[in-house]
Length: 122
Image (cartoon, one colour):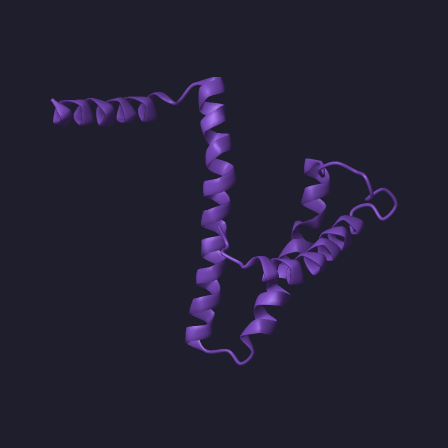
């Protein structure tokens, strides 16, 4: 979770919402208001634009390039990726495993972990 104060969120959210609308306009300038989530095809069309926005923001904050600044910014981008995966993808993966079943190799591995843990508690 990006720990940002309520005051900073208020300051940032209007600009972020404007950027979201601008990104959606790159897909369909006519029908962005009141429209639900983007389709897979629409999202694919704007991924490069999302990359452009993140690249501009991170690069403009860095200023003069240095190893330390590059390391810090790539660290933040990695944290964003990990947090997104943890908050969104993991829940989806778990849902799909429940819905479709696990692959046998993972299922056996997980069962062994559960058995070892049960044996440790005995």
